[in-house]
Image (cartoon, rainbow, N blue to C red; front, top):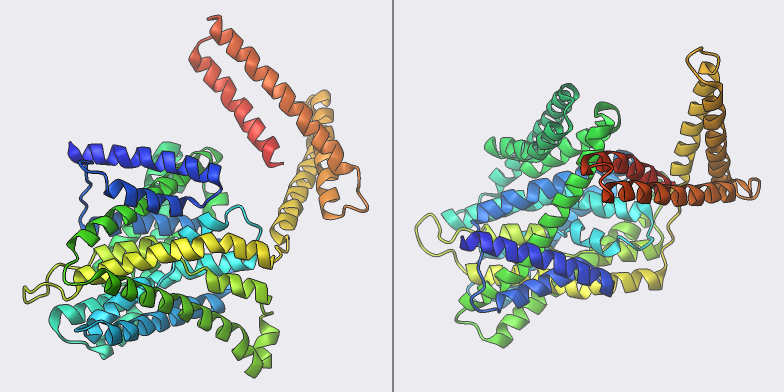
Length: 527
């Protein structure tokens, strides 16, 4: 019962803090962590106790899967080189830099334990970055690089993490075995994820039952992750591959009802898991601090500052070096891949916020080694991991919007133009088909005329968006049409509510009609 009460408290806190964050115009992960710290200090509050493995399995696969499904494959593929350099090279460089600092400044810390610390804090978390930059206009390519980095860097960090933990557990570090395992982790994870994605799409094609289809979608990331981990491959890359494949086939493989139900379902899952995870970061940091003994407060703060600064500065140095040094010595590379403006490079360098990945791997540390002795420096490693999360969330999280507004990296507007082109092509295709079927005996002439007028207005509007100087009036006419239609929908909705209130119709009839009105209103709002 206490666990249930604790979950209810956390859900209430997620709702309250998210509302407060929206009103204060602050990214909700920052307030969630602060709220978790505050809740951790409340005496007598019901506590949630989750095993490290449960935390990892509960949060990582569904969150990575959601990111992968909605990652644009074309942009991901075209930016694969910078994504790979960040997700592999930068993760390993950060892990080594942090390990070197930890080994040097923390008395008694061995290289394997220092590498455990480095691999835990190495991967940034795009969930936090996305939440912070959601309402800011930054170049699409920057977003693609940051999202793609977070999809792939977990695999690099986790393989290195597992090797480092194994070295601490057994007392042996075998770099040759690690080098041999990495190719299988990558290739095996991608192959298993792709197979799971193909199977999932095939199964969902045959179901034709939206609630069941959405339930199957919830199982996909866990099936991909657990299957890959069972054979020693990367569960994270398996989830990424499955998500990318499913996302590529959503439009043609799944019916409209399934998509309409699935999108809000996954948005809700993502919001709840993110909120709970960032609350747990604050809660667990309080618990970890209570177990730390043998270290003075100044020493702990010094260690935390040094490790955090190492992680932040390593990223800044790597990103700028990768962006400019290679192009200085390789003109061919500069021609193949146009460089990002320095403002955009600065944003990428500063967006190294740690979050859920670091939380899960830190809490997954075993309490004892294979010999039954306590895991060396375990509480300190967890404390430093949480300190990096907190410092990057606060320092970089609060500073990122200010930096973006100050530097002003311009969004090239390509996605908006492509959307207008797609809507224009769709409207023209509808008009072409309308002309073809107009002579059919089953098609009323008045309906054809009405639909032709509606699609003509859409064509005018989208042409105006693509070429404003030549089509000045099209968009204004369509906006006036949309505004009038919204007023009419409001009147329709009020009419059916009045009928319900006078017991002329029941709630079931109201909900069915209201659903159609809501869909039309949503479409107009998107237009």
